[in-house]
Amino acid sequence: MKDRVLFEARNVPAYQNKMFETREAALACPTGDVILAQDMTSGFVVNIAYDPHLLRYDESYQNEQGVSSLFRNHLEQVLTKVKDAFGHGDILEIGCGKGLFVELMLNNGLRARGLDGAYEGNSPHIEKRHFGSTTEVPANAIVLRHVLEHIPDPLQFLRLIAHTNGNRGLIYIEVPCFDWIMHNKAWFDVFYEHVNYFRLPDFQRLFSRIVDSGHLFGGQYLYVIADLSSLRNQMPATDFPAINFPSDFSLALDALAESAGTDSTRGRAIWGAAAKGVMLSHHLGLRGVTFDIAIDINPGKQGHFLASSGLAVAAPREALSNLPAGSEVYVMNSNYLAEISDMGGDKFRYIPVDGP
Image 1: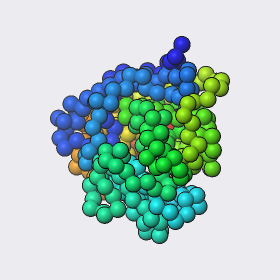
Image 2: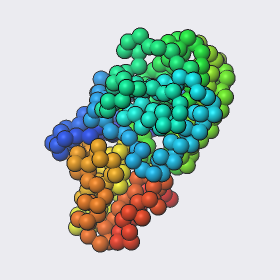
Image 3: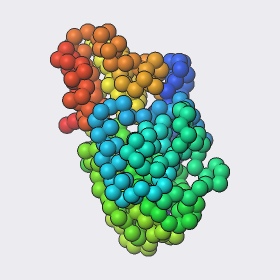
């Protein structure tokens, strides 16, 4: 058997980070199925129901997290690893988003440039296009942060990068950690935009030489620094264990919906208008739980609407001033809980969605 199904979620919003100009457009967001399966020929976990034609990444795609001081600290950690591994050669970041990490590298004396079709700025160091859309100039090193999980054929994409780069240089890869998702039963981290879900052993089969690897951001992300020349032409014919996916993966979601209840008079907000917030509003909405507002410190999200639920997004000051005392604030990522409670004060009840 080629594929071993692990988990299914039907009719989820196809977009998690695309922001919509109107509530009507957000409600009309396309939907797709998530059927996570382990490919028993490669060991990879993929969404076998994924259809790339549902998605188009443009300026309305807002996944920049660097507004948060906590996430900037994470980027500083990544910068240290990049500097230690890459030195002062030419660095290309593929899928650089709004360019924050490219600018961080430049400000720290590194020779960096970036590519992304969703880029909105005017930096001479960033091209607004996708990798491979024209002849590429080789770099001494490649940065690939939170891109590979979006690519339908990750091995082919890595081969394209290696070939374009003359099969030389190092590559820094960072992706969500599937082991963390399973261990924490993080139902909010399974969504349509991610076609792949990686574990460290996957990269150990992809590359024969890994310089460094580990976990970051409280274990939520994994990273590898690998030698592009060691990318295998074929996956090794080695045995790998079948993934033991938790049978009670969605139990916390059901419990959250039950504790929330359907009392529409209770003030409720979601703090975090990104993928996790979209999935919370979607799944709890199906269970009759409604929210008043979504809160995000990213100005690119404010004044827009979340996919599927059509929930409006506001800046913290505006949203908090309109919420009655005692309102529930659902914090999508407890890494930010201290930062959020400092902003909101003791007027509200904070509920970490990824907590026990």
